Image 1 (cartoon, helix red, strand yellow):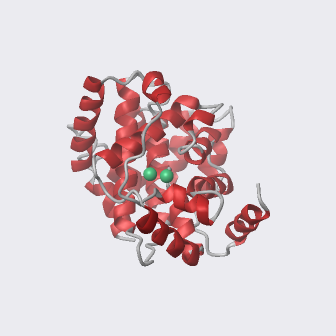
Image 2 (cartoon, rainbow, N blue to C red; image 1 turned 90 degrees about the vertical axis):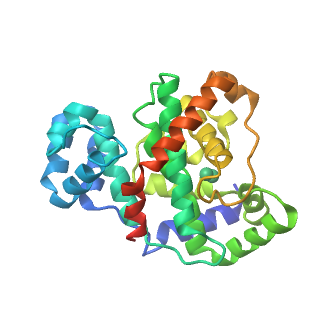
Length: 288
Ligand SMILES: [Fe+2]
Ligand SMILES: [Fe+2]
């Protein structure tokens, strides 16, 4: 990588006011890396933090999941949804709350999260449609795939202004414009933050590789799912993906994910219906 890359990375890593995750989430991320941690340990940790537990339960009980009875405890949520999904929901809620709204010209903060949410839901639906091993991880990976953009816009506003101009003038994607201005793109920046936050490896890679799916070596299917969900959510015109274009998805990914026109039609339908029930998630970013 160029010296510029290292300089930019150092600016981000040393920034004093980077969004911070709560200490419980930091502890949770440490715990899930340990092979001796049980579902009960994680459930207990979330339950002990009143704010985190109530945030998680609010999402569990939201119309997005549509459970017929109210779920009052984290333990109950784990029984109904499984440990991984509850853990990821706690993480999702915390991360959504950690970012502060960015008011930068040419950047639509709420539209950004709508695009992220649509990608999360589409990745989730797609993972279930193909019965993926990553069914529990697709949602959070889709939700955070573009987190690097928030850091880019906030810490490098001059470069972002140049990127915006290039998108308009040359009619290219945000990623292509970023490569012209920076020599790399927001997926790298998102990867720096994911590593700094000690995210699990699959989540780091889902974020870092979402624009380079053909280069994936580990956790490949998760990366393919996030890539496809990003393209599909742009095709569905939900939120602001950074530019008005729909990137072409490599045929290899279509084949690997066993995508047929019929399956894609179903995924679109389910993603749209999920999006219509996702108000409680988006409220977290609207509240700032
Ligand atoms: Fe992206
Ligand atoms: Fe995206």
